[in-house]
Picture 1: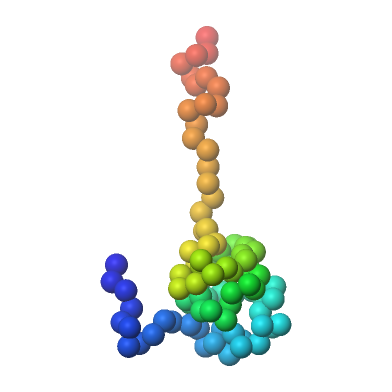
Picture 2: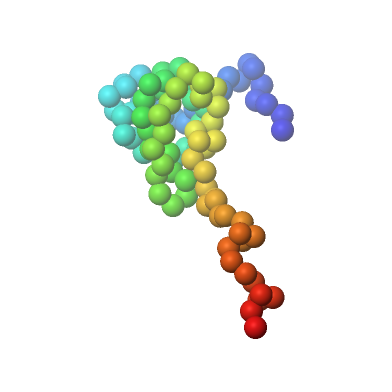
Length: 93
């Protein structure tokens, strides 16, 4: 997937762009914009990222800077494989 042009800069939603300089407003704030990039102003903040059903708490660290918010709130459930769950129909009498 091609990356965004350097001259355009990273994408940050207008709502987040206004709030990124006021750190006290970002604490425990719900973020619906999963496509926005994480900028250095968000480091050491705890935010709630919406995954389509419920908000997921995420602590922003320096390693997450430059990524998108949506990368850290999974939208699909993880289901265990059915191979170890007892016998199937073959084992019954």
